[in-house]
Length: 200
Image 1 (spheres, rainbow, N blue to C red):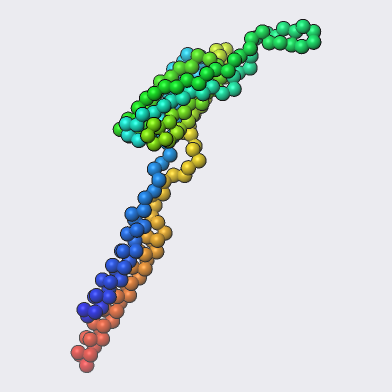
Image 2: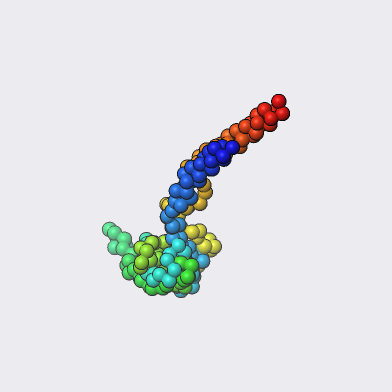
């Protein structure tokens, strides 16, 4: 009887020892994400650039990078051989701002942009180096474009953190359960035989 209990205890210990490394596995932190409160705004209209996934209290640099400028809306002047627009749009410069992530690694920064165009907003963590981006379109009044209601969180290409059971944890749990079941069965069989031998 003592040998059987020792065998059951040993099998259970082996199963639990094998499962411990799987439970203690570390997974990468989720990627930083960002979005804007309104994906399409008018010149000078305020919107909020927000995101999460940064370190708590981390300093952030927010960069506003202009994309393709809208088509020139000036009239054309022709000299008979070529047409030249009377208004030429020059590329805009990149603007940079600073803010700090809150205790949860999130931020919200209010911005307004005066020139029409498509802008990429990027937040970069000073310590973690993580980046998160979103885009906003500034349209001139009277263009008839509808408000798109805000952009979804940016997809950075990284998958979600794995929070489920590891395959080795499941395997070792099944092995341990099988060993415990076999040990319990052998105890029952030995007791029945001992009882039968005692009554005979």
